Amino acid sequence: MNEVVIDCLGEACPVPLVKAQNKINEMATGDVLIVQIDHSCAMKNVPEWARKDGHNVEVEEVDDGEWEVIIEKA
Amino acid sequence: MENTAVKKVKFFDKVKENEYYKKWIKSPLTYVAAAMLLSVFQIATLASTGNPWGVSGVFAYWGAWMFEAVGGTVDKWYYFASPGAQSTLDAGFLSHAGTWRNLGIIFGALGTTLLASGFKIKKIKSKKQIVAAVIGGLLMGYGARVAYGCNIGALYSGIASLSLSGWVFGIGMFGGAVVGSKLLVKYFM
Amino acid sequence: MAEQSTVSRRRSSASRRKPKKNQIPFGVALVAIIVAIGIALGANNPKLALFWVTGILFGVILQKGRFCFTASMRDPYLTGGTSITRAVLIAFAITTLGFAAVKYGYAAQGLPVPGMSYVVPISIATIVGAFIFGVGMVIAGGCASGTLMRVGEGFHMQLISLFFFVVGSLWGAHDFGWWKYNVISKGKAIFLPDVFGWAGAIIVQLAIIGLLYIAAEKYEEKRKAS
Image 1 (tube, chains in turn yellow, orange, cyan):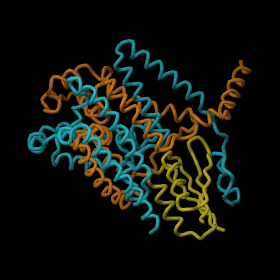
Image 2 (tube, chains in turn yellow, cyan, orange):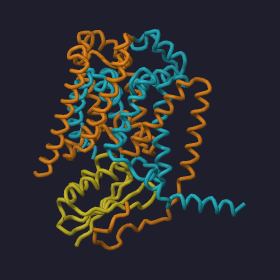
Image 3 (tube, chains in turn orange, brown, green):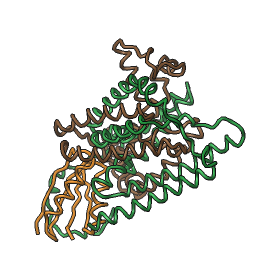
Image 4 (tube, one colour):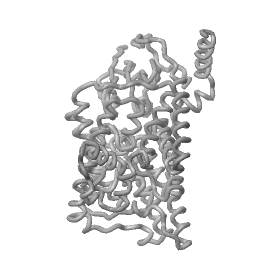
């Protein structure tokens, strides 16, 4: 069970989501993708996309204005 | 002295745990709820100010005032020639209603972010972001003037005002967004 | 957001856990400043206070909803998602009804209809300007309202974007005379109630919005399946 972390801190609007979508395709079922973000848009659209695609999602607030979106590929 | 400071800190920490704080202040709105609330205040804007909401028109005046501040003049330009425009220019930005609304948007967003304890300065990460911001900003500014407005004034307010121009703008804007997305992925990611 | 942990993982890189600062006092202080400014403006000029308050409200709603018009147009192509697109359509529909009610109220009494300055001539300039705007907003990571919102959220990139938005606006204002004379004057403003009557215009527009909504939903399902 692999764990991959992508650092998307400071990235502009669609970038975290696009990077997450691309990365998850390279991963196997059961692997966990952790997306580090500080963009409020991404804090909403990344989990929304991941849930719609059927993955298990958890959002954790790491610091003021910083989140980690933890996605387990289903 | 120190006791009250400690008490204050503990108070605000307790606020953070409060259920109403979490429900009303901390948690985000759904897109649909935001759409409904925006509509309410758009309609209120039309009813109370006589005009729908607009954002980018203000920026042309900000540009004019900046230009005048460094010695330029826009008085001969067609865009600023009308008596209404001239009096707005003369009155200055502190008297400009639209300016205060745009500043309000900034402060409103800042305030709600701070109250939710989610504020963070996001510094520039790469040169690409600077180039993107420069080009993107210029394009938006120019395009909005030529098309009589931006995503708010031309698109949202235009369509809601039952003006066909709003729909035409929407089509053009959508096409531009597709092209912009391709450029974004290719050059700016 | 008290979700059961459905994700199996070890405590991982959530390692940068420095103690979170509580920003609420700053938020409260800012609210006090906002109120003070509102009162100060209102004392001199109630109109300014009104615009300030509506701006604050829009800023709050946009930020709390993470509402981004840019995303509504960009996501269908880039990520296949249309949830914001559909929310924007809902906003169009509700606002259309409200605007129509206000406007009709004035028209029915024989008074000048408010907001007609936003019914503008349609010409090549509309398409070209909108297209340019669309390209710019996606590249810049935010539209007009989105840029202001993100300045408030602390994004340096949007501060730059805002500055150049202002510069571009000045440039556009400079060239506007040319556009008006050569392009826009050849166009015509079309106010839908003039064509379909008030009821007709509302019905037609809501119907189109409804169809677009359905199309957006179906499109997202289709993209997901592929």
